[in-house]
Length: 266
Image (cartoon, rainbow, N blue to C red):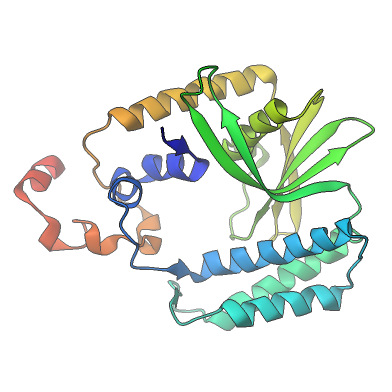
């Protein structure tokens, strides 16, 4: 049985060929990691460290937070990290990370919101038989003991600010909300909270039980579609620049243009 994830589902929707190369053929991507992904990972890791220290009763100062970020950046950075946008260098992204953390610290310190977990793995059962399962990782989970409301916090380090309308339709955190309702008792509400760090902005959304049930059925239908698919054509878009499988894609490598593939493109 395959355990799905939001990333796995989104990959199929964005580009069926990439899905096949990554999850069925299990090829290793040519691009080990992009600088955007590296930046996101280091910022997430730093914020995880901050809240874990708070859980131990240690309130960090801003210089300590930045020191941690600088140390892990320097330790983990390597020449295999791909910079797609040639007008920028690694230092540009490093300073973006510094700014994200300064803004976040000034806005949320001393971080006493009863965070109960960071990078929490969550399992979601979509049916009673256990045929359809998803898993995900919550950046940070908060529990308000007085109201019994849970908050799923997600950090975004990209340069795109989604609207309230877009986030009210967002699937990823809504799926995690299902997991919270299934794994915790007497959950009153689950709030979905996005931190768009490039804009120093927090946006909150909620889902009704009916909306979650509808989403559940949509995901089951999508999984059924994936598992019945036999043809995996590419879906070219601006995201191709960041794809790690370009050498295995016949849109970029002519040696993969077999007669059968060319017929599918016509």
